[in-house]
Image (cartoon, rainbow over all chains, first blue to last red; front, side, top):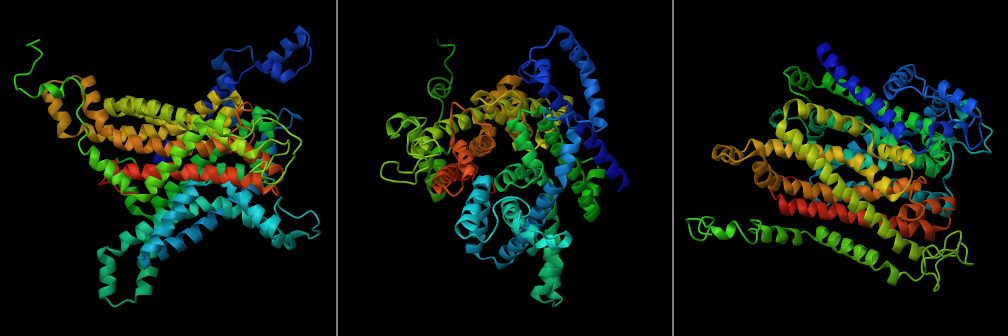
Length: 328
Length: 298
């Protein structure tokens, strides 16, 4: 397990390095004069321009700036926002928690509903159910996620007025501490559902297929021969072995969920990182925009790594395969 | 003249003139037609393309023309109502289709070209070239495609060329991986071994053995990429990263977000996006069944 972990880590480090490099060169491609962008549209004396140039190291050659950028990033210094000169890292840290509440809820939702529907479809062998699962899966991959959110707001908030449409807590609420939980949950329901929609379809299809496959394996036959009831076989032997691919898929799709939360937060006015990103795009605040995307990329690398490790821990076959020189 | 003619009569027509028909081309077409969702998808795509091409004649109003009718629900005068500055929604949707389709086509072609090139080189040469290229692809792939496209457009600026470039950047790694896998598979076949034995050049092997056999999955992937491009572009426009001089379906949905109770703004534009992307996925699945009958599909 130690060697497996080390190998996966060694794989992740250059990947992170590559992502940071990509972001650096993207920043260099930004049109316009970076000095002008820093000063703004004010007439400035040549002395002041020289001062700013030196302060930000813009007169240094590209490689020197790259080296400094790397140092900055690895000390978690993401620069300052254009508006108010607040450190980008602080801005993001303020919002990260809210985004995690939304994304983790959505992932849990996707796991539970996706596995339940997938097992049901796999076990029942009903063609109608199969078609339904496939249809919903293809549909959820084709629907613009933010539009689905708009439609749910239109139905549940505007027409039926049973659920709130915007924000995380209602403004009139005076509750404190844990009493705010019900309020939070009602606000959470729609955005989390929208965010989970795509993954529910994906997970359900994968679980359905693996349930199909597991049901034909000899050990299921053996269990049946031993006289176990159908329910026991499904619970103990089939579901357990079908869970692994579901967990893996959700882990690897964490990036999609995180990126999707940008759109969903914008629709539902959820005060998270996505909304911050939306504002930074409107204000052309590149430091904030790049900081958030960098964080998303880093999160994807880390979660993929964790998924690999969990998979290796749970399923020894993966570890053995990687140890034998095969690349997973 | 007599030198170029083959000794065996009748083989000449395979060398010059028209290329031989793809074996099973007719069966493939029949398989495609035998799958109702694929046919429905194809019909939807054809209709959308025709409407986009004829937008100038079909649209009842100039999509950018403002009027006194502000935020009006559908009526006989404006079939799908008007937006906050009095522009006709139906005309915006008809013209917006042009933008979405252009972005999809350019992105699809760009992804096909770049992905095939990188994937073919990686698969054919293998070794260090392969390792480096696939590592680069992985860096692009680890950033969620929407986030990557978003950051490129946000930094460079929102015009159609940059939007297409950003979408290609977001979508090429998957295509490259697919092509690489296909090339690796084909390189180990007896067909290529035979071609090598006969002494064919690398170029000839790539052009006449590897590429034609790798084509079916590429076509399928490109169709799916068309749908992805439309979805990604709509998402970008929704966040305000649409080309302001070429309004698309996503821009209408961004407008709709300001006042969601004006359902006539959000419902039609979203339905159109959904239908077109669904159609692209159905056609992709139909092509998959038609061109690769033995592979697994939806």
